[in-house]
Structure formats: structure tokens, C-alpha cells
Image 1 (cartoon, one colour):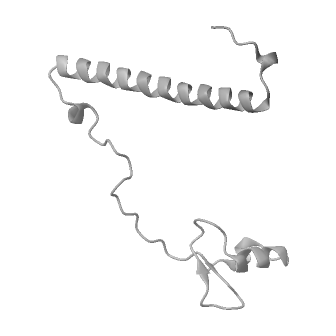
Image 2 (spheres, rainbow, N blue to C red; image 1 turned 135 degrees about the vertical axis):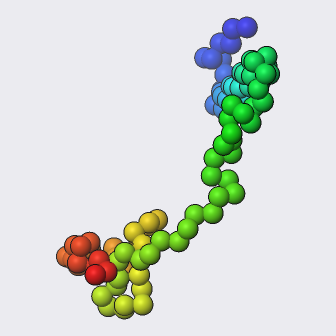
Length: 108
């Protein structure tokens, strides 16, 4: 099936691109499904279960991360602290812009 791209208008090209991306996603899902089935067949043939071979499937789901002690303190308002994880708080960014260094904001 050859498509002459020069004869397609803008909307037809966008539609074709959308259909191609959808088909690409479908093919990837089919390939993953086939691969998973082959792996399960191999594992079963050897006398094991998928849980025997892949005991920690699911990654971090369900695992609660512990809280982290604060590492930095706002010198202008000591009640504001930051652990150093995640997005930097505004007071931290403002202090750096004012010329402070991150080591100046460390909790001692």
C-alpha cells in the first residue's frame, strides 16, 4: 500500500500520522504480550512460577517511603525547613538568588 504524501492536505496528513502512531502503539503492545507469553511458557517448562523467577514484580507500588529529617532551614523564618528532596521551596531559591550558598542554609 503506497500512499502519495504529496496529494494529501494538512488535515489528511495529521489524520494519517495519528493513525500511524496508534498502530505503532498497538504493535508494541502485541509484541510485549507475545514476549510475556513466551517467557511464562519457558518458566513453566522449567517447573517454576513467575513469582519464583520475578519475586519483586511491581517495583515500588505499595511501599511507603519514610520521612526524611530536614536538612535546610530558612534563616528568615526558622519554622520553614526543607529536607533537600523534591522541588526547592521559594525561600530556598530566593536565598540562593540573594547570594547565600546552600551550605549557609544547612541545619547545624
